[in-house]
Length: 559
Image (cartoon, rainbow, N blue to C red):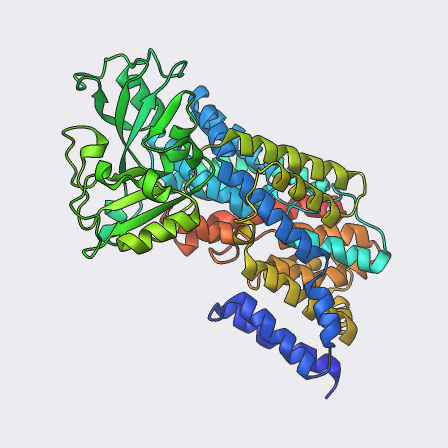
């Protein structure tokens, strides 16, 4: 059988499997490579070279850098400061959308979207609206902005490598800035319009655990020079979207009570507010030790067999016995008659623990505690955040001067490790391995598509049209994802009379993953918290796609 026909059949089958979403994409990628090797279309050595190629290394490095910055809580803190200082809702959102769009050129859109989830709840509380008004626009801006640098998305990194493979020169770091920057800027008012017309849906609670972990009780100590000294309890509650249920010394009498140095506040709050609260100057989360900053926060369920049942929080001495600190206990059904340490632990309670993964795992094993679904919770650590941003800026600067992309970001990561801005123990956990594997395996498939002549056949169907090139890439990006679309359509763009403009068209279209909730991870992250339906993404995502298409075609010269 002709090799071109074999690759075409494999392409059709794998595309159908990816669209069905029945088998995880990395497994599909691995199976595809194994079939290609078995049929003699690619050799094992060439497959290994593609799997360990520049795009794979760059993506893994970027994931570690962006997740490290995300875990510091510095961007959450910046967003919270903006929301408190800007009173007008739409001005505040416009500023936040613009910042997200700009930052997304250098960070993972997934990491950015995760950071925006707690901020969306914070804004929703302040504006007396549902988070559904904000979550989708934040996710869209994180994806929309992440297209104007060669390292901003997986698809752009792949196109960067394809260009080097063919022409042996590196694309400039900001090659996609035109029309990427214009699209991002126009996306800001469009995101505001989407926010205006999104339904004001409340998140549906589907099981008792979701309700019980809705709010926690925690304790905070007011230290000297704290920014909340002199504020009333009412002012503190309104500014940070929390509720003070106790204050020591003395009991809380009214909301007009002034907060003073050495006061201890018992606070009821949602877990998403932890980052905001831990970032307040001069406010220490008690009984958490200072070394909890930058550590993992884990929510654990108290089972009937647990040895902590009927113990008070002071009885447990978490920090000394296990080097684990209790940051909070689920507020459901709790009445406060004293300090947090006097609360007794009951079956069904949820504890919020801070510490190293190893220490938390040991404590859970010894005390028969069950982990809950992993949630992105952070304690604010400005030092790690600032060092991470400096390292990222240096990497971008090196790449802007034409230094190899993988080498530039490897230097940035090495500096973060030396300065302890990231933990080498957590590095591999920060890498989204299914995506990395899929990129590597689909690069192998892309090479087979090129060598078999299939890309040339598809190119003949496109007839050199930028419009058809955009639409075909768009179709693939919303079915098999931006990585697969870049691998397949990138070589076709390089065969155009003006390959530089054509590859920009592919970059813009490959990142247009707005039409379905499963077309990218950012959409999936916000789908459940925002209680969105598939038609919500189709309707509002279509408006974004039309905008991107218009400005891309103006750049290409087709309009």
